[in-house]
Amino acid sequence: MASKGIGCLGEAMAALRISAAKPATTSFSRQFTRSMATEAPLKQAANSPVTAQSLMQSWNPISTVPVTIHSFPSLEPQSLEQWSVQHLYLPLRRDLLHLAVVYEGDNTRQGTASSKTRYDVHGSHRKMRPQKGTGRARLGSRQSPLLRGGGKTFGPHPRDFGTRLNRKVYDKAWRTALSYRYRRGELIICEDGMELAMPQDFDLVADKFLKDGLREAYLKKYMSGVLSTLGLGKEYGRTLFVTGDRRDRLYEAMEQVPWEGRALDLEDVDVKDLLETGKVVMERSVLREMIEQHQSDLVSRIVVNGLPKGGPPLGEKEL
Image 1: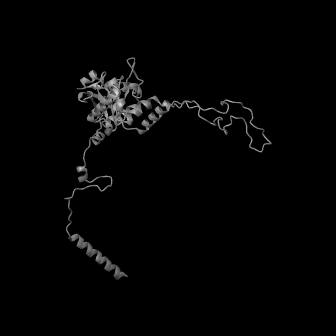
Image 2: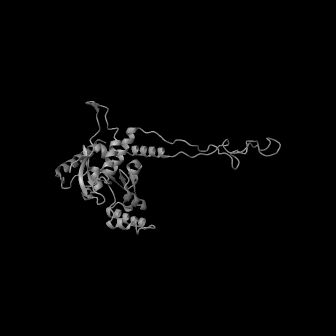
Image 3: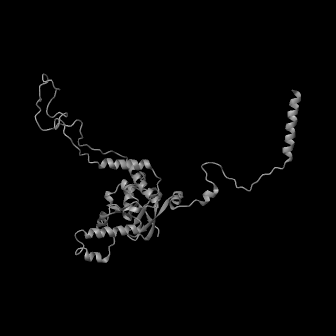
Protein backbone atom coordinates (compact mmCIF):
# COMPACT_ATOMS: atom_id res chain seq x y z
CA MET A 1 0.00 0.00 0.00
CA ALA A 2 2.85 2.35 0.86
CA SER A 3 4.67 1.59 -2.41
CA LYS A 4 1.45 2.18 -4.37
CA GLY A 5 0.95 5.57 -2.75
CA ILE A 6 4.55 6.61 -3.46
CA GLY A 7 4.14 5.60 -7.12
CA CYS A 8 1.00 7.74 -7.54
CA LEU A 9 2.75 10.70 -5.94
CA GLY A 10 5.69 10.30 -8.32
CA GLU A 11 3.40 10.30 -11.38
CA ALA A 12 1.65 13.47 -10.16
CA MET A 13 4.96 15.30 -9.66
CA ALA A 14 6.14 14.27 -13.13
CA ALA A 15 2.94 15.61 -14.71
CA LEU A 16 3.37 18.86 -12.81
CA ARG A 17 6.96 19.30 -14.12
CA ILE A 18 5.78 18.69 -17.72
CA SER A 19 2.97 21.25 -17.47
CA ALA A 20 5.34 23.85 -15.97
CA ALA A 21 7.85 23.33 -18.76
CA LYS A 22 5.24 24.21 -21.50
CA PRO A 23 5.04 28.00 -22.22
CA ALA A 24 1.69 29.57 -21.46
CA THR A 25 0.03 30.69 -24.70
CA THR A 26 -2.90 33.05 -24.32
CA SER A 27 -4.55 34.69 -27.35
CA PHE A 28 -6.16 38.10 -26.93
CA SER A 29 -6.88 38.54 -30.62
CA ARG A 30 -10.59 37.65 -30.21
CA GLN A 31 -12.61 40.45 -28.62
CA PHE A 32 -14.16 39.66 -25.27
CA THR A 33 -17.97 39.41 -25.26
CA ARG A 34 -20.37 38.41 -22.55
CA SER A 35 -22.14 35.11 -23.09
CA MET A 36 -25.42 36.13 -21.48
CA ALA A 37 -28.52 35.16 -23.42
CA THR A 38 -29.98 38.65 -23.06
CA GLU A 39 -27.04 40.35 -24.81
CA ALA A 40 -26.79 40.27 -28.60
CA PRO A 41 -23.44 39.66 -30.33
CA LEU A 42 -21.47 42.71 -31.36
CA LYS A 43 -21.84 42.07 -35.10
CA GLN A 44 -25.59 41.65 -34.82
CA ALA A 45 -25.95 44.80 -32.72
CA ALA A 46 -23.85 46.79 -35.18
CA ASN A 47 -25.90 45.65 -38.18
CA SER A 48 -29.32 46.12 -36.57
CA PRO A 49 -31.38 48.86 -38.35
CA VAL A 50 -32.19 52.03 -36.44
CA THR A 51 -35.83 53.06 -36.81
CA ALA A 52 -37.52 56.34 -35.90
CA GLN A 53 -39.56 54.64 -33.20
CA SER A 54 -36.46 53.12 -31.58
CA LEU A 55 -34.80 56.54 -31.56
CA MET A 56 -37.86 58.11 -29.90
CA GLN A 57 -37.87 55.39 -27.25
CA SER A 58 -34.17 55.85 -26.51
CA TRP A 59 -34.51 59.63 -26.37
CA ASN A 60 -34.84 60.86 -22.79
CA PRO A 61 -35.44 64.64 -22.59
CA ILE A 62 -35.11 66.34 -19.23
CA SER A 63 -37.48 69.31 -19.22
CA THR A 64 -39.01 70.10 -22.63
CA VAL A 65 -39.78 68.47 -25.96
CA PRO A 66 -40.11 70.15 -29.40
CA VAL A 67 -43.46 70.38 -31.18
CA THR A 68 -43.68 71.37 -34.84
CA ILE A 69 -46.65 73.47 -35.93
CA HIS A 70 -47.82 72.65 -39.48
CA SER A 71 -50.08 74.32 -41.98
CA PHE A 72 -53.23 72.56 -43.15
CA PRO A 73 -53.82 70.76 -45.45
CA SER A 74 -50.27 70.86 -46.90
CA LEU A 75 -48.73 69.92 -43.48
CA GLU A 76 -45.70 72.11 -44.16
CA PRO A 77 -43.73 73.09 -41.01
CA GLN A 78 -44.38 76.68 -39.97
CA SER A 79 -42.98 77.12 -36.46
CA LEU A 80 -41.44 75.26 -33.53
CA GLU A 81 -42.55 75.26 -29.90
CA GLN A 82 -41.24 73.79 -26.67
CA TRP A 83 -43.61 71.89 -24.37
CA SER A 84 -42.97 70.43 -20.95
CA VAL A 85 -42.28 66.72 -20.61
CA GLN A 86 -45.08 66.65 -18.03
CA HIS A 87 -47.49 67.53 -20.82
CA LEU A 88 -46.39 65.54 -23.86
CA TYR A 89 -43.73 63.03 -22.77
CA LEU A 90 -45.21 61.03 -19.92
CA PRO A 91 -44.42 57.30 -19.77
CA LEU A 92 -47.08 54.88 -20.92
CA ARG A 93 -49.48 53.92 -18.11
CA ARG A 94 -51.93 51.31 -19.35
CA ASP A 95 -53.67 51.20 -15.99
CA LEU A 96 -54.54 54.90 -16.13
CA LEU A 97 -55.76 54.66 -19.72
CA HIS A 98 -57.94 51.67 -18.83
CA LEU A 99 -59.48 53.48 -15.87
CA ALA A 100 -60.22 56.54 -18.01
CA VAL A 101 -61.80 54.57 -20.87
CA VAL A 102 -64.00 52.56 -18.49
CA TYR A 103 -64.98 55.74 -16.64
CA GLU A 104 -66.02 57.46 -19.85
CA GLY A 105 -67.91 54.41 -21.09
CA ASP A 106 -69.85 54.04 -17.85
CA ASN A 107 -70.88 57.69 -17.81
CA THR A 108 -72.06 57.65 -21.43
CA ARG A 109 -74.45 54.72 -20.92
CA GLN A 110 -78.08 55.87 -21.12
CA GLY A 111 -79.48 53.39 -18.61
CA THR A 112 -83.03 53.81 -19.97
CA ALA A 113 -83.87 50.11 -20.35
CA SER A 114 -87.14 49.41 -18.56
CA SER A 115 -89.51 46.46 -18.16
CA LYS A 116 -92.81 45.86 -16.37
CA THR A 117 -93.22 43.63 -13.38
CA ARG A 118 -96.40 41.69 -12.66
CA TYR A 119 -97.70 44.70 -10.75
CA ASP A 120 -97.24 47.02 -13.77
CA VAL A 121 -98.89 44.87 -16.46
CA HIS A 122 -102.41 45.98 -17.44
CA GLY A 123 -105.32 43.70 -16.54
CA SER A 124 -107.28 42.20 -13.68
CA HIS A 125 -105.43 40.60 -10.80
CA ARG A 126 -108.18 38.02 -10.20
CA LYS A 127 -107.05 34.46 -9.53
CA MET A 128 -107.48 32.53 -12.78
CA ARG A 129 -108.69 29.20 -11.34
CA PRO A 130 -109.30 27.62 -7.94
CA GLN A 131 -106.34 26.61 -5.86
CA LYS A 132 -107.48 22.99 -5.57
CA GLY A 133 -109.83 20.55 -7.24
CA THR A 134 -108.95 21.04 -10.91
CA GLY A 135 -106.01 18.64 -11.02
CA ARG A 136 -103.82 21.29 -12.63
CA ALA A 137 -101.00 23.34 -11.23
CA ARG A 138 -101.87 26.18 -8.95
CA LEU A 139 -101.87 29.55 -10.68
CA GLY A 140 -102.39 33.10 -9.59
CA SER A 141 -103.27 36.16 -11.67
CA ARG A 142 -102.95 36.70 -15.40
CA GLN A 143 -99.88 38.90 -14.81
CA SER A 144 -97.78 35.94 -13.62
CA PRO A 145 -94.28 35.86 -15.19
CA LEU A 146 -94.95 32.20 -16.10
CA LEU A 147 -97.65 33.17 -18.61
CA ARG A 148 -97.39 34.83 -21.99
CA GLY A 149 -98.02 38.56 -21.69
CA GLY A 150 -97.24 38.61 -17.99
CA GLY A 151 -94.68 40.66 -16.11
CA LYS A 152 -90.92 40.13 -16.23
CA THR A 153 -89.02 38.78 -13.27
CA PHE A 154 -85.99 40.86 -12.25
CA GLY A 155 -86.13 42.88 -15.46
CA PRO A 156 -84.10 46.01 -16.16
CA HIS A 157 -85.20 49.37 -14.83
CA PRO A 158 -83.88 52.90 -15.44
CA ARG A 159 -80.63 53.37 -13.55
CA ASP A 160 -77.42 55.37 -13.56
CA PHE A 161 -74.37 53.37 -14.66
CA GLY A 162 -71.99 56.25 -13.97
CA THR A 163 -68.88 55.62 -11.90
CA ARG A 164 -66.43 57.94 -10.19
CA LEU A 165 -62.76 58.56 -10.89
CA ASN A 166 -60.28 60.82 -9.16
CA ARG A 167 -59.88 64.07 -11.07
CA LYS A 168 -56.08 63.95 -10.98
CA VAL A 169 -56.03 60.37 -12.27
CA TYR A 170 -58.32 61.29 -15.16
CA ASP A 171 -56.28 64.37 -16.07
CA LYS A 172 -53.05 62.39 -16.08
CA ALA A 173 -54.68 59.78 -18.31
CA TRP A 174 -55.47 62.54 -20.83
CA ARG A 175 -51.87 63.68 -20.96
CA THR A 176 -50.68 60.08 -21.07
CA ALA A 177 -52.80 59.49 -24.20
CA LEU A 178 -51.37 62.63 -25.83
CA SER A 179 -47.85 61.59 -24.82
CA TYR A 180 -48.38 58.14 -26.30
CA ARG A 181 -49.31 59.71 -29.62
CA TYR A 182 -46.39 62.14 -29.48
CA ARG A 183 -43.81 59.45 -28.68
CA ARG A 184 -44.97 57.40 -31.66
CA GLY A 185 -44.93 60.40 -34.01
CA GLU A 186 -48.70 60.20 -34.55
CA LEU A 187 -49.65 63.59 -33.08
CA ILE A 188 -49.75 66.34 -35.73
CA ILE A 189 -50.34 69.90 -34.54
CA CYS A 190 -51.60 72.42 -37.09
CA GLU A 191 -52.27 76.14 -37.06
CA ASP A 192 -55.64 77.45 -35.91
CA GLY A 193 -58.48 77.64 -38.41
CA MET A 194 -57.90 74.18 -39.85
CA GLU A 195 -60.20 73.91 -42.88
CA LEU A 196 -60.28 71.83 -46.04
CA ALA A 197 -59.11 73.79 -49.10
CA MET A 198 -61.37 73.14 -52.10
CA PRO A 199 -60.65 73.94 -55.78
CA GLN A 200 -61.71 77.39 -56.96
CA ASP A 201 -64.30 76.01 -59.38
CA PHE A 202 -66.05 74.05 -56.65
CA ASP A 203 -67.89 77.05 -55.21
CA LEU A 204 -69.04 78.13 -58.66
CA VAL A 205 -70.52 74.84 -59.80
CA ALA A 206 -71.46 73.24 -56.48
CA ASP A 207 -74.88 74.86 -56.10
CA LYS A 208 -75.89 74.68 -59.78
CA PHE A 209 -74.55 71.40 -61.11
CA LEU A 210 -73.58 69.20 -58.16
CA LYS A 211 -77.02 67.90 -57.23
CA ASP A 212 -78.74 64.55 -56.68
CA GLY A 213 -75.77 63.03 -54.88
CA LEU A 214 -73.05 64.47 -57.13
CA ARG A 215 -71.82 66.80 -54.38
CA GLU A 216 -71.40 63.93 -51.93
CA ALA A 217 -69.64 61.80 -54.56
CA TYR A 218 -67.28 64.65 -55.39
CA LEU A 219 -66.39 65.27 -51.73
CA LYS A 220 -65.90 61.54 -51.20
CA LYS A 221 -63.41 61.21 -54.05
CA TYR A 222 -61.65 64.48 -53.27
CA MET A 223 -61.21 63.75 -49.55
CA SER A 224 -59.97 60.22 -50.23
CA GLY A 225 -57.31 61.65 -52.53
CA VAL A 226 -56.23 64.26 -50.00
CA LEU A 227 -55.89 61.72 -47.18
CA SER A 228 -54.01 59.27 -49.39
CA THR A 229 -51.57 61.98 -50.47
CA LEU A 230 -50.91 63.10 -46.89
CA GLY A 231 -50.63 59.54 -45.54
CA LEU A 232 -53.62 59.89 -43.23
CA GLY A 233 -56.16 57.48 -44.71
CA LYS A 234 -57.33 53.97 -43.98
CA GLU A 235 -54.04 52.44 -45.05
CA TYR A 236 -52.36 54.28 -42.18
CA GLY A 237 -54.92 53.39 -39.49
CA ARG A 238 -57.51 56.20 -40.04
CA THR A 239 -57.18 59.75 -38.71
CA LEU A 240 -58.94 61.87 -36.11
CA PHE A 241 -59.28 65.61 -36.83
CA VAL A 242 -59.93 67.79 -33.78
CA THR A 243 -60.92 71.44 -34.17
CA GLY A 244 -62.06 74.14 -31.81
CA ASP A 245 -65.28 74.81 -33.75
CA ARG A 246 -67.12 73.02 -36.51
CA ARG A 247 -65.47 73.39 -39.93
CA ASP A 248 -68.23 72.87 -42.46
CA ARG A 249 -66.20 71.64 -45.42
CA LEU A 250 -63.88 69.42 -43.40
CA TYR A 251 -66.70 67.87 -41.41
CA GLU A 252 -68.91 67.38 -44.46
CA ALA A 253 -66.09 65.73 -46.39
CA MET A 254 -65.16 63.41 -43.51
CA GLU A 255 -68.79 62.35 -43.14
CA GLN A 256 -68.59 60.96 -46.69
CA VAL A 257 -65.56 58.77 -45.87
CA PRO A 258 -66.11 57.40 -42.34
CA TRP A 259 -63.78 54.47 -43.06
CA GLU A 260 -60.91 56.94 -43.55
CA GLY A 261 -61.37 58.73 -40.21
CA ARG A 262 -63.58 61.21 -38.39
CA ALA A 263 -63.71 64.87 -37.41
CA LEU A 264 -64.77 66.08 -33.95
CA ASP A 265 -64.75 69.33 -32.06
CA LEU A 266 -63.06 69.68 -28.70
CA GLU A 267 -66.18 69.12 -26.62
CA ASP A 268 -66.86 65.70 -28.18
CA VAL A 269 -63.34 64.26 -27.75
CA ASP A 270 -62.41 61.89 -24.94
CA VAL A 271 -59.48 59.63 -24.10
CA LYS A 272 -60.83 56.73 -26.14
CA ASP A 273 -61.00 58.89 -29.27
CA LEU A 274 -57.31 59.77 -28.89
CA LEU A 275 -56.35 56.09 -28.80
CA GLU A 276 -58.53 54.32 -31.34
CA THR A 277 -57.24 55.88 -34.59
CA GLY A 278 -53.86 55.73 -36.28
CA LYS A 279 -53.06 59.45 -36.20
CA VAL A 280 -54.44 62.55 -34.50
CA VAL A 281 -54.45 65.94 -36.24
CA MET A 282 -55.50 68.90 -34.08
CA GLU A 283 -55.21 72.65 -33.91
CA ARG A 284 -52.68 74.36 -31.68
CA SER A 285 -55.39 76.07 -29.64
CA VAL A 286 -57.09 72.71 -29.10
CA LEU A 287 -53.91 71.18 -27.69
CA ARG A 288 -53.42 74.19 -25.44
CA GLU A 289 -56.98 74.00 -24.12
CA MET A 290 -56.69 70.25 -23.54
CA ILE A 291 -53.59 70.73 -21.41
CA GLU A 292 -55.15 73.62 -19.49
CA GLN A 293 -58.23 71.56 -18.65
CA HIS A 294 -56.31 68.43 -17.66
CA GLN A 295 -53.35 69.41 -15.49
CA SER A 296 -54.91 69.44 -12.02
CA ASP A 297 -52.26 67.00 -10.75
CA LEU A 298 -49.53 69.50 -11.75
CA VAL A 299 -51.02 72.56 -10.06
CA SER A 300 -49.62 73.08 -6.57
CA ARG A 301 -51.54 74.43 -3.60
CA ILE A 302 -48.59 76.59 -2.60
CA VAL A 303 -49.50 80.28 -2.73
CA VAL A 304 -46.83 82.67 -4.03
CA ASN A 305 -47.50 86.43 -3.87
CA GLY A 306 -51.17 85.78 -3.18
CA LEU A 307 -51.61 83.50 -6.23
CA PRO A 308 -51.54 79.71 -6.38
CA LYS A 309 -48.48 78.23 -8.04
CA GLY A 310 -49.41 76.92 -11.48
CA GLY A 311 -48.09 73.98 -13.42
CA PRO A 312 -45.37 73.94 -16.08
CA PRO A 313 -45.63 76.65 -18.74
CA LEU A 314 -47.54 75.80 -21.90
CA GLY A 315 -46.00 75.78 -25.36
CA GLU A 316 -43.41 78.49 -25.88
CA LYS A 317 -42.60 79.48 -29.43
CA GLU A 318 -38.98 79.05 -30.47
CA LEU A 319 -38.92 79.50 -34.26
